[in-house]
Length: 130
Image 1 (cartoon, rainbow, N blue to C red):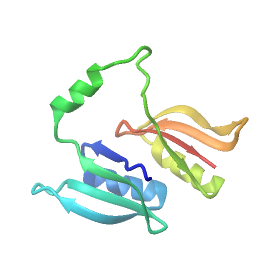
Image 2 (cartoon, rainbow, N blue to C red; image 1 turned 60 degrees about the vertical axis):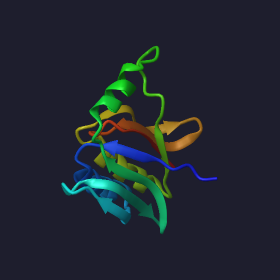
Image 3 (cartoon, rainbow, N blue to C red; image 1 turned 120 degrees about the vertical axis):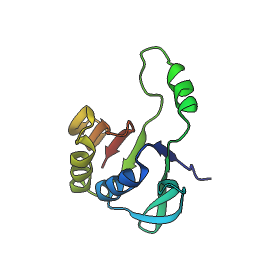
């Protein structure tokens, strides 16, 4: 079993470049909408798909998701990336924090030597660690 994750984001072309740099990824299989945005863009690392990006085009769907607030209004999901080194975590943190919201600054926790939590400029909640 494999969990597939797709991030629905406005400005998908810019977002794909952002994530390629932040996570040292490459663009895999992809399809375009007629307007030049991504219908589907697989992002790979080490030859394996990690997640996909698609242009967010359905405002009604997004409004429905956002109106279903749970107690505390905290995100119900984060994407976790387990890196090979602390240097990779620091690089990703630096990029994700640009115009983002740092929830947990880069540091350590009892179970993890190097980690951080960031909501990036596209509204995606990341837990990055080594």
